[in-house]
Image (cartoon, rainbow, N blue to C red):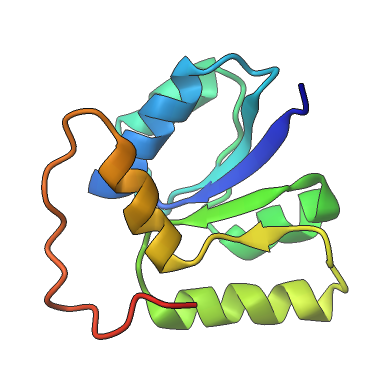
Length: 129
């Protein structure tokens, strides 16, 4: 089985749940290779440190360091300007391997999580790519 490597941007309410789900999976399937959480008081950073998962408060540093070793970037900040900046950086670094998960797929995956509550969507006019 092929291992999928993930960079997670944001460990807030939504990203935190994905983080917890991913870390329950066998690393031979899904491995979080880095997180990008600027809130240094986020309690999940203690867990990521124990697991040896580095935190890059500036996501650009993680993308530049790991490059195409990242299969998937999961940005749960749901800030369209951040997704645009990530896509631009992938182009600038000629990274044609890494996939940035579109917001609509974030929602799809959220719906599959056990016990997931509704996500307030009023502030997202578009959840496409």
